[in-house]
Amino acid sequence: MTQRTDVVVVGGGQAGLAAGYHLRRQGLDFVILDAEAAPGGSWQHMWDSLHLFSPAAHSSLPGRLMPAQGGETYPGAGHVVDYLTDYEKRYDLPVQHGTRVDAVRRDADRLLVEADSGTWRARAVISATGNWSRPFLPAVPGRSTFTGRQLHTVNYRCPADFADQRVVVVGGGNSGAQIAADLALDGRVQVTWVTQRPPRFLPDDIDGRALFDVATARRRALDAGRNDTGGVASLGDIVAVPPVRAARDAGLLTAKPMFTQLTAAGVRWADGSQSDADAIVWCTGFRPALAHLAPLNLRGPRGHIPTDGTRALGEPRLHLLGYGDWTGPASATLIGVGRPARDAAREVAGLLT
Ligand code: FAD
Image (cartoon, rainbow, N blue to C red):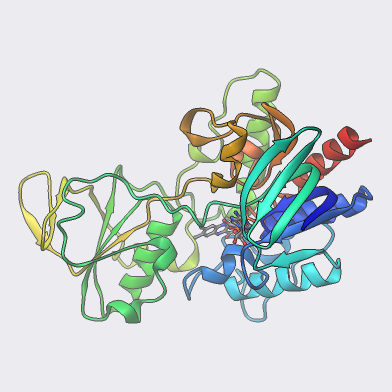
């Protein structure tokens, strides 16, 4: 059966909920289709010890401050899930969980949204499917010959899974540093941390609060035709959250340059020497989950869809939200997604009226 609505939001993580909040304020009829069975988006799948890099009050969606988590300056992922669950309920957002969208197509003056549980004819679509479902693994020689365990950030849970093992953690970003620290501080795991370039820690007094301001300042500079400030990347790659700081200060977080290939038993280094390993954890990032938009034929370079703000350049009825700085400064963060969500909802409302 085909249902009709003004707007379909695809994805019910933080970005989809922020879109819902602002669509409601615009008085539009909408539905949020989310593949997850329960609220919380990808926060439900983060590793056990993960904590935010900003305090609760600086990790809030529009309209409702995230409450502090007792005893924690930086809330854990479970606290974020609770917050998003409450947010969804409090604003009575029409989220249909357990609904995966397979395709969005043009259908005359409407967009047809095809999901596993039905089809929607919408006047506009906001895509907010995040990156978590598209883990990226680099092409490294010998990857298929390694006989140990290989996993990506999305599959990592806790050090106990690697007790008494030799683990190589690959990646110089936040996930790599935090997982290497998590394993190293446990004491039972022999960790080798590998990065493509020397790790760049942000100054210890800078946490996620500053990142939003820096990303916004960069966007403003670019929009005004001024020089690129370099944004967050100019400060460093790794937020020195407490466990990362503790591991680094204890000398447990010293990175080695990237190995040249994987062997059956481990890794081979640039000087030809080899190290055995039981597991490789690839903390090598993500790509945007945009497969459902393929029928619209909008992909540009690097797999992104070219946008003006959040609006797809090739399809004005489509907005992209929460995927990263290319869809709004810091839009892939809790605090950062509110503004682009507001702008997207306003633009959609303008288009429909
Ligand atoms: P998601 O949370 O991934 O939600 C997308 C939703 O869309 C999911 O429920 C998914 O199931 C659904 N979906 C996907 N495809 C489809 C489809 N085809 N049909 C229907 N539904 C679909 N941000 C911060 O602000 N502070 C932090 O401290 C922080 N730490 C982070 C640590 C890590 C390790 C990572 C990876 C990210 C971190 N982030 C942090 C960044 C960011 O907040 C998260 O990535 C956030 O989850 C992105 O929200 P989202 O709604 O865009 O995507």
